[in-house]
Length: 120
Image 1: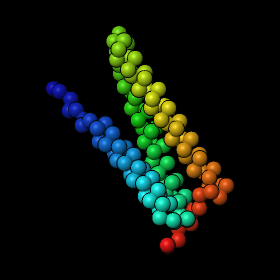
Image 2: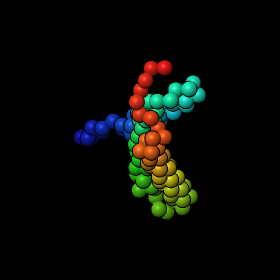
Image 3: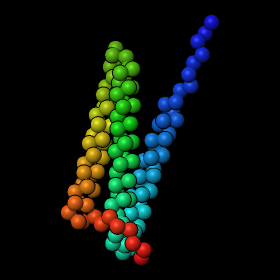
Image 4: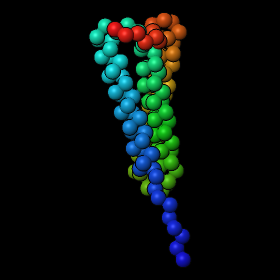
């Protein structure tokens, strides 16, 4: 008797994290719009949320590329090379997201990124 198979949830997970990246991009656009409109406060929560979503999504995509690398047949050199490049690209994106997150924290500590919302 065949064992029942579990549904593949990786596509749902990928979609969820792609939505997180989209929300982060919308937060970035909203922050830029507020800055262009002359708003001078309330940027920290938006930038922190944006960079946290980007950082989490980048980490997820790195785990996905590592999983793909692990499942790649070592005898197939072109696929192995492509999987290695994907891991390197995902790793560099994660590093960039982490640096961006740290930059937001630094700018808040130095007073360059106000964190209080006010109506304007």
